[in-house]
Image 1 (cartoon, rainbow, N blue to C red):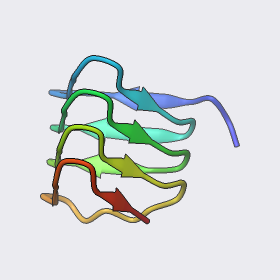
Image 2 (cartoon, one colour; image 1 turned 45 degrees about the vertical axis):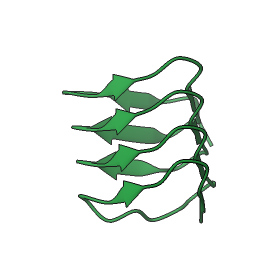
Image 3 (spheres, rainbow, N blue to C red; image 1 turned 90 degrees about the horizontal axis):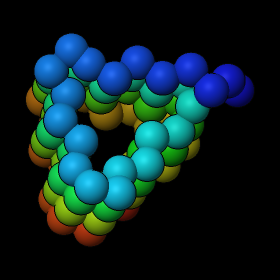
Image 4 (cartoon, rainbow, N blue to C red; image 1 turned 90 degrees about the vertical axis):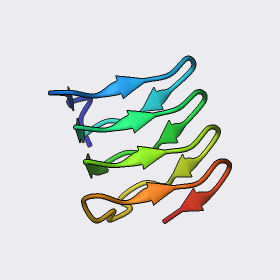
Length: 72
């Protein structure tokens, strides 16, 4: 596992967002205090406040994740 991250193009991250290693975020909106684990790729996603995406979760493009939800 590395510390590599690709944020963008067109990614908007709210306050207190944490993004793990080996992640790619493009055309996404992550609201405040979202936690993204390691080895996650998000494309055209909307992630609600305080949601958690666990390590290695597979999220299809265009997914909407509600506030406080845990995925993966």
